Image (cartoon, rainbow, N blue to C red):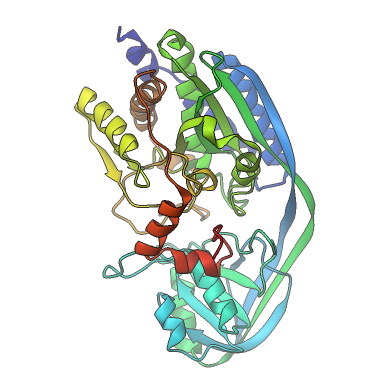
Amino acid sequence: MTTWIGDVFTSDVGWTHLERLVDIGDRMAGSDGEREAAELTRDALADAGARNARLDSFDIQGWTRGDSSIAASDEDLDCISLPRSPAERVEAPLVDLGYGLPEDFESAAVEGTVVMVRSDIPDYYDRYVHRREKYYHAVDNGAAAFVYRNHVEGCLPPTGSVGTADDPIGAIPAVGVSSEVGARLARRHEGDDVTVSVEADVHPAESQNVHAELGPDTEERVLVTSHVDAHDIAEGALDNGAGTAAIVEIATALANREADLDTRVEFVAYGAEEVGLVGSTHHAEEADHETITAIVNNDGVVRGRTLEVTTHGFDGLETAVETIADRYDHPIETVPRLGPHSDHWPFVQWGVPGYHVMSTSDEVGRGWGHTFADTLDKLERRDLREQAILLTDLVVELAGSDVTIDHRDPESIAADLEAQDLAEGMRITGDWPYDE
């Protein structure tokens, strides 16, 4: 029967939920808005037909944005503080390190300086270097402050958190500046003293994960996940309202296909992803990993028309998604490498099979994400509907009694991280989980 496909393609359930999320405003981790988003998502999953819809609360390090500034000579330049930056004021010489690759820090004298780096990497580089890795290279090399320059034009300063699990508040003040402000700083003030100032309120806070279930009450389960929090400077439509809208749409479709599920499907919309995967880490520490047969983590869907899935070296995951692509004669790109960012990772690092589901892009980084421009008008209903159809059938495939995807040994994951040149970055950011 294919009538369910027509139902999804004419459904407004997911899009309506997306509109509700973006209309909340601030969904920063630990905020009232994040709590409201979690409650709306819990209720939407219950309305879709999922059972036992609930919230699981946990404590986090709260951080609320205050004013920030960069003063250079006789001018003040626009910037925003990076979440979990300490509240400090630093005056020091500006050093522009361009892309801020690990080798750039090795060859430059940055101790006691304000270091500025771009948010992208060059075409020739063989891996993505995350913002936090660049930040902690600056910290380890003695920088006094950190300036993160967007590579996307349009007067859009980027946000994104710093800090580690052990030390949630970063070691040095950090701000984001637009591509244009960064160019001006580099042209006019390289080597000059500049003053970076960050004001922020640091306080205890609470976040929460949303859980709900469909299908038979088996011990084993497939997780279908997203995150409800977003940075406080924008609507958070792409990152990650769209992912949460997708799991609501998938739940609505699966509620009408429960007879097709041989394994329980658990929907989880995590809190506090944007400040260090706190919600998914909390869940991973409590969950029985052996009962999780697969994870379908939606973070970056709907931004483009074609799905892209990172399969983390699990051959069975690649086979399952190829089955769906062939069934619908519809492209789905697969990336077999590891991707140690987003809410699948607290499980995948221990060998649990998990996808990171995104949509393809020719751009490096998040595009409009993590900027003021992360707004609803960048997305299309058609893409949400088409991707929800493919992902619904993928979940049914994974929940079939004839599909078994072997877990991997954590040692093999660690070896792949070394081989793919990801281990160094994880060590410097405090994210390396394995015994040395």
